[in-house]
Image (cartoon, rainbow over all chains, first blue to last red; front, side):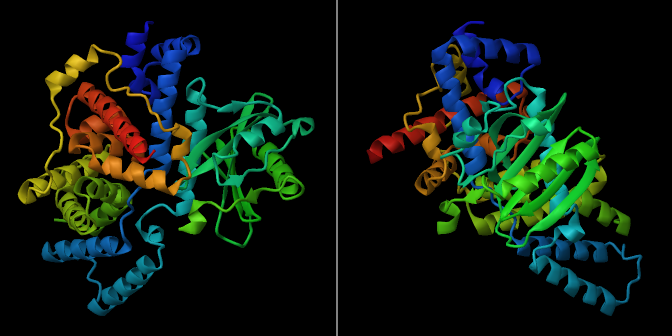
Length: 269
Length: 184
């Protein structure tokens, strides 16, 4: 493939919109051609910056409440209120709803919980990273002293990167990812033929939370928080193996190689 | 018209995308209050026409309605003066020149991270982009839609999605480069 063709496909390539064969032949070209590689890196940096730093405008809570009452009016007008709920009861209910919306747990009523949404994000990231060659790690090394410093200057915290080779979990590498509306550290470990993703990011919550285990789409997911850091581990490993992995992390992450949060832009806001 | 179960169905399938709806409206209209009004109007419209939603992608369905409402709003208020008309002819000519739209990004891309000033600059430049490029970039970079989904929301062919993204990114890089040169 020549440079002209590669450049014309650059956006689709970086957006992962090409078929695998074309994707791979561009990858090959980029490995051999420094000029095109430089352009792809600049483009990638711009996209990453937009994804991670671009302002996402969330709907204000009052808007959700306003929509609910507009929908109520439509229901009332179309005479669909077949529930025949006593008026005082529906009023009381709407007070409760308003209170819930006000307290920011709208999702409890309106749809999946934040934890479920995050689970979906984590699964999607785990799957996507393995779909396309070259996407899994930004820094590939089994040496925690190579992987850990790589995050310096890219994140506003230092994720714990542990050497668990002797326990059967080999470090594969790390990359930047984006979850829960912030850049996070994605660490990749391997246990036999199974990949494990460990996502780490700081949390404002002081209280530690005990590990939750769940199974979705054949993946095991365990998440917990410890020392003001959140951890999400996901793999196609069986539950026991992933549990022992998460225990190792829990034991070792907060001792010695503890995750440390550096003051970042968020603190100054 | 609407059974209670249908209301519940709507709240389960469509309303989870309220943030996406608001984000798109806010980026297209560039104003909180207008985005608020148009998003609410769009959700009400979506509910009224919920019968016409036969499953599928609720997010793109809602975003299509929102986008349409934003365009009507802009047309009525004539607030949006496209600063740079998009010339398909000119652009397809550029396609032959591989260097077009790939202006070197002089500010070190890594410096875009974690620096509040750069973050603001990025917003300003994105907000200043002509509407058709801004919406393509918002749908792709902030909303993470696939080309196919963007094509459905914007009601344009896939090829146009690609050229708008490429041109939009090129313009954004030019703007960012221009700004960082002014500052130094």
